Length: 435
Image 1 (spheres, one colour):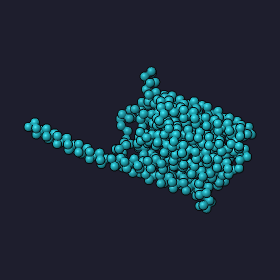
Image 2 (tube, one colour):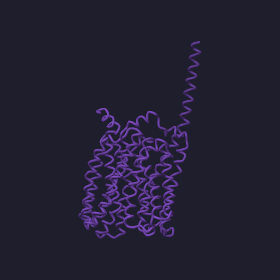
Image 3 (cartoon, one colour):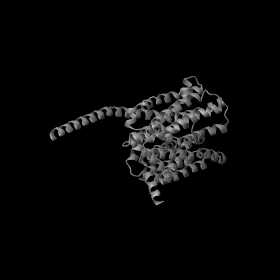
Image 4 (tube, helix red, strand yellow):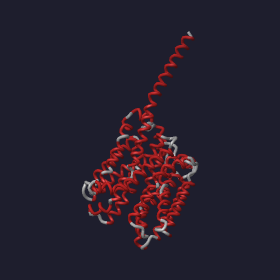
C-alpha cells in the first residue's frame, strides 16, 4: 500500500514537473519575443523624443513669418519644451501605475504623431502652440518612463540599454536638425510639410507598443499591474526626503541648461567671432553628433563603477575647457571647442543611467525619474533666456560665457553627490528611522 502510494505520488510529481517544464518552454518564446519587441519599441520611441523640437528650430524663421509671430513670442516658444517636460513629466508615474508603462508610452507616441500632424495646419499661433504642447506631452511622459521600462525589463543590463536609447535619442536629435531643411526643400519648400513629415516616424514608433499593451502573456512576463506590496512601497517612498534625489534633480537641471544654451546660442557665438554661418551650423551638428557614440559608451562605463563621480568630473572638465576656449579663441580653435562641448553635453545619458542606479525598484525609478526630470527641466528654463539678456546688455559674449562656465562648477559638485553608491529608498528609510 505504501509502495502504491509512493508510486502514485512519484507519478504525480513527475507529471507536475513535466507540466511545469512544458509551461516554462511555452513561456520562454513569449518572453524572448516580448524582449525583442520592447527593444525595438525603446529604440523607435527614443528616436521620436526630440525631432518635434529640433525640426521646429531649423524652420523657426519660416514659422515666425508664416504665423506672424513676434520675436518675444518666438523666444517664448523655445522655452515651451522644458516647461512641458516639467509639468507633464510629473504625471507619468501616476499614469503608469494605473495603465502600465507600456500603455502610457504607446499613447505618448500617438500624442507625438497627432501633435506633429496637427500643428502645421491648424492655423494661428494659439493652435500651433496647443498642438506643440500635445506632442511635448507625449515626449514628457515617455522621457520619464524610459528608465522605468529599462529597469523592469532589463534589470541586469541597465547600462547597455540606457546607452542604446540615449544613442537613439541623440541620433533622432541630430537627424531632425540636419535633414528638416533639405527635406522641406525636396517636398516643395513649404514649412508646414517640413514639420509634418516627422509624424511618420512617430506613427512607426506606435506599432511595436500595441502588442505589448494587448498581449496578456507579455503582461504576465513583465507585470504591468501594481501589487498591494508595491502600492504600500510607493505610498511610503517620499522622494523629496532623499538628498541623492535632490542632487540628481539639480544635476539634471544644470546639464539641461548647458544643452539648451549650446543648441540655442553656440552658432551665434561662432558667427560673431567671424566663423561663416554655414561652418557655424556644421560645428553645432558636430557637437550634437558627439552624443551618438558617447551616449552608448558612457552608460556602459558608468554602470561598472560603484561611484559615477569620476565620470561627472571628466565631463565637467571638458565643458570648462570648451568654455575657456570659446572665451579666449572662439574662431581659432572652433572645432576643438565644439568637440569638447559635445563630450560635456553627454552628461544627459549619464544622468539617465544614474536614475536607474539610484533606486532599487520600478516604483522607486519611476518616482525618481519623474522628480529629477520635472525639477531639472524647471531649473533649466531661465538659462537660455538669461544668456540672451546678458548678451544684449553687455554687447559681447564675455559675460554669457562666464555664466556658462560658472554653472559647470555646481554641476560637477551635485553630479558627484548624485553619483555616490546609495539608493533613494535607503536614504528615505534612514531619515524615517531617525524621526
